Length: 344
Image (cartoon, rainbow, N blue to C red):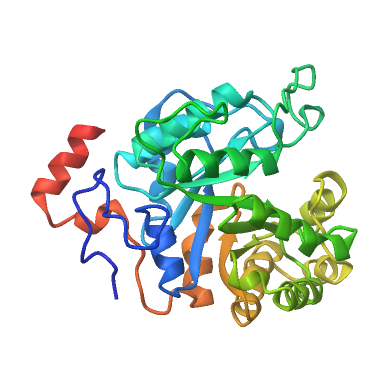
């Protein structure tokens, strides 16, 4: 089953449905009750646009939206807005990540308008990792805003058609607003309360940090349901393949906010092929997450294993026969193919 029936030529917007904040496919899929799949494009250390096109094509037919990361881990790469500029022209559904670390409110509001003008329908509002964790620890952090104030500003721009200053916008950005969440670090009782604050600030969907601990996620989701938050926001749980027990131990020790239980390390150590076991673990986690009430999708973060995403999605069976939109769905249409070639 495909969802292409009302798709325009790639690069041209869909119509915005009643009750929707954006004309985007991700919001459409979530509001229609589909279990969605999102993933992250690792931005290149290059000025060659072909590198972006090649990396995006890996996900064709397997994900509903692609995150364009914004200096993830405080490391330099091609910027989120530039990746969005290249891929929205081809019709991909992008989630523009906006970090408060590197820009003040003037620049950020400009990026919100710029992204929306290019056809970005989804924006993920982040505080951002500290510069001390990245490859330019001497950089000056900005943090003029935090994720809460960024959400509030973006919502005001969309719903009231004004900048934070109160100055009117000629045309507001029609965007679906997201935030990040981490259910897996202490204080655990505080995590659902922080989620509630992000929803109040404007978050409509949430992508979480990596989940390797199903019991911890179940406890979090139980509290989320008790508070009625699962009916106020779409929850997309982060997952990813681990390459080996050694890499899992390194991540656990060096990547802030990532919790990997001893049982996962033990499972990988006991496997004959640890990389294959890491992929199977990801599939197993997705299938368990899929059954949890209040969960609306998974966000697959496969750093340096992006080519494994199609296999993970297929083996997990989470698309249930549907095929997310992708540009090569139009391979048989010569007119559309010429349009794509002209844009590239």
